[in-house]
Amino acid sequence: MTATKRIIMLGAPGVGKGTQAKNLQARFGWAHISTGDMLRDAVRGGTELGRKAAQFMEKGELVPDTLIIEMVGERLGRPDCVSGFILDGFPRTVVQAEKLNELLSRMSLSIDAVISVDVSKEEIVSRLSQRLVCEKQSHVLEGDPARKPGDACPTCGSPLIRRKDDEPATIRRRLEVYDEQTRSLIKYYEGRKLLKSVDGLGTPDAIFQKILTALEIEPARS
Ligand code: AMP
Image (cartoon, rainbow, N blue to C red; front, side, top):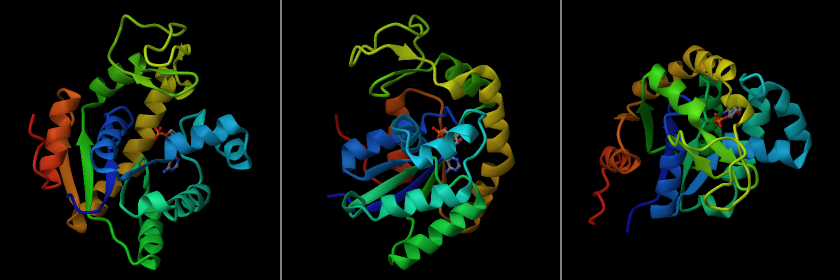
């Protein structure tokens, strides 16, 4: 049995943190909380939050902290978070990190580890400009230059599209935003002795094993 863990995944857009968060969820049953996915659902559903968030997301800017914190606060109160959770894409600013501390201390909880997945900027731009997602289920396809927008998703058959914010100009803006705001989080969590850096180059399996080691969990036996 692996203990309950509450983890933050940090890393620029496109480093593969979503894939790794899904791997952790599948293996340990911890809730995967992706603020990007939640916001895209809200935009698709045409909710008030979605309408407010869309204008920032399309430009690659951050959605205002108040909207995000309310959304995450509600999500952390759901029953699937009791066995642990992985925050993916949140916090993105020191203000959000401080608000998260407040939310968790009200619930008498704390973060066990912050995993930073590190990949060079050139590698990120190349990965993101090749990334496709399917329209219906958001299955993600990375690193397959043979597939183009409009092809069928190999998992569910719905058409593949490029996310609006994966267009090259928006990617550059998202990386700038990451540099400006999110890098300070690395220092913030380093200061709290929670940060564990993992090299994000390699196969998804190899990176997963590095994350398990960083979390001091025994690697899977194959
Ligand atoms: P992601 O899929 O994590 O790259 O998020 C896609 C977009 O959603 C970002 O470019 C932001 O516009 C918005 N977003 C996601 N998470 C946050 C957050 N924690 N704070 C502010 N904006 C966010």
